[in-house]
Image (cartoon, rainbow, N blue to C red; front, top):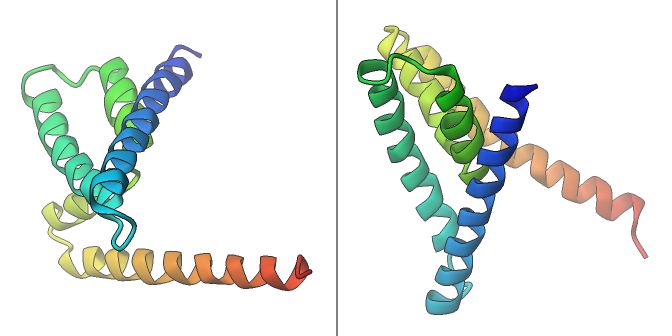
Length: 127
């Protein structure tokens, strides 16, 4: 139960930060390009890389801190950071083709699933 609370606390803080960044970019740069989303995806991935290395090398792999920051905060800030970590793990395990397949499948299938959801919803709830 403690782990769930840590994830929820971190996730709420991460989502709030993502929202504030997205609003700031929207206000200053407008809606022509999703600058807020790309910023949090890149920044979240950078922070994930730094954090997991510091956690492993300096903080002795504290599960509580991992749940709060990696799973919670960064998961709420952007799930892209978790995706990026998965790719790095596959790559560093010496499985570059599996990493490539994972990247390709994740991007193509996720975008495809979104369009399927849009189409199904529009079909079933058309006015």
